[in-house]
Length: 380
Image (cartoon, rainbow, N blue to C red):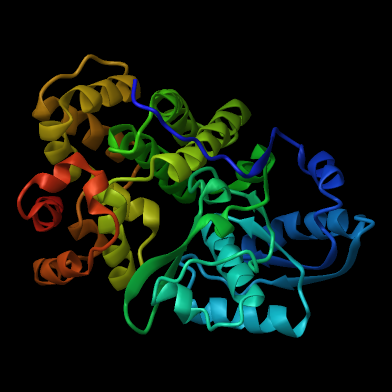
């Protein structure tokens, strides 16, 4: 067996209603001035933000609490700059990311910028890896999907350059993550399905990844099974607590996979798509996934057939049956299965393809000639 290294530096707390217990255990981390970074609006309306603030106020080591809620669904570089400026003015020592992947990615980027002497562009544009000066981050996800609470990346959109890219490095791993499925129980259908599909994308992509190990593949198989069983149940009943808890668990373990096996081509292709259309990450992945699966099957037949078997509970072999199974699941979720459904025109595809970046060779299908443009064209 080939040797592998696993890196899981984030301390994890998982369970329904575990937040209060976890924050008590993390008191020594919450030392000094604390900044809560959140998308804000729905969490404030549900009373979750007030609940978190009151719990944080009970920490014996916390001096002052501040909130920065100017983060949009696709976190913008301009918003991150504002958060960094605010954090430096308030002498912030610890950052709490509270919300979906957008809030946690923004929190990590803001933690980098507050701690560093350089401008955030050094990390985002020029690719400098953040160092130990990055502030510690506590991640509290309120959706089941992105896995950002366990990843070493912060994905941000530069709205001026129409570029969606990331700040990456070991320093971006949150010091701790509290995965409490209670917060996901009020998430509406569309976001539940989009984030749930992101879990599936993480699971299948890390399953076929060249960097996959027996450990990450074991987790991928379990997560694919969970999504196939519980996301359809949530489509029927958003109040299904068992399904919510299982989806939160699948999201968490796929966050671990992100840091150890990474993703494949769909994530790389979604970034230009999302930057130009300002559509959600999950919707973009869904629109690309069927086309990608057809090419991936050619180079990773056994794993793709196993993945779709776990997802659908059916023995499916051959390219057509594999792609049909994935397309049917996407439609069950009520998500777009083509790029046209996101308002994309054929004239935009070459621009998207030109802007795709990142580690493409992690995907076996990358050896297909012109595969990037081919996937975009077939997904249209």
